[in-house]
Length: 438
Image (tube, rainbow, N blue to C red; front, side, top):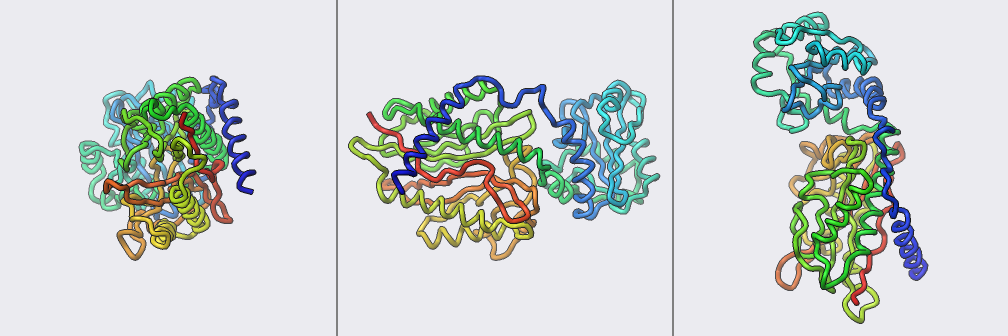
């Protein structure tokens, strides 16, 4: 059985190389579905998100050069002068109103994303027009992007001051941070988004397998592997899933956390981590880790202890997958991981089990963490899992090296919450990749 598994792994390894010998973009710009998906997200997902967050209105203010992080999601990515996007919950529907200076307002009308586009003269008082719309709707709770959470913190100090001065205490007393609304809305993905992310996740994983094929022990540096993946990204027309200088993070040495690949030369006996993510259609991100072992001369397989460490990581990953069900908390999933690590003798790690992934590598939504710091769910780890949420999460096993430093295997997969539980978004790694020394 073990032999057949190895044969399958080798077959998959070579097939992935053949598949990605191509250089065409699997996500061509002309096929970008974001405009329609964005509209469906507002129509289908925002009403429920507003109900869950307990708000009946939301104000997003956009501007040129230093835009709100959510501009792309509300149609404000092309803002020149200050523009505002207002959302009013009405039963099971949301009415959307865009207020924009003339010029960009034409593009907003062509977009057909909002129910109403109000055109104002450039340089005029947009805050007065916002007030008129708020007075007309008279909402009970008004969400604004001013909070301690970066994605929901795009309203500048001067913008908030101007808004408060115009609306007055009657309405500013109804302000609430938009963090709950943003978490609820962005965390859930439409089925068509999930299909795009699945395809992107599979490509991410296969590119990592392809990259490991290039390693020559004693010659190839971690940075060489990273450069190879950058080259393949350029050939395929995809971009970085997070900061370009830290993607991918290829590490054949001791634990270093999130960082850039260094000039370390890969040696026989090394366990290599590759943490890699791509962005497709300039909207959706992936985050996948694959691990390899460099065989020493004469070795035909990894040492028993390394294989056991890898297996512990994989089993921890599978246990977390089984725990990720609608209605559970992110803390519970993390607790399952921590308990397994203690049972298998792993050292504790500083990182949480996982995080939402989607529009950013670290997206909005419940955090699969917290169990190492608290005996009960708090903060982001207390948020419940919902159908359609997507995560990237690790299976951990950490041990101490002879020099006193630590090494951690943290195979990372992407998963989506379904009504029946959770499922992987790409083929998960089940065998440690073996690299032969020559």
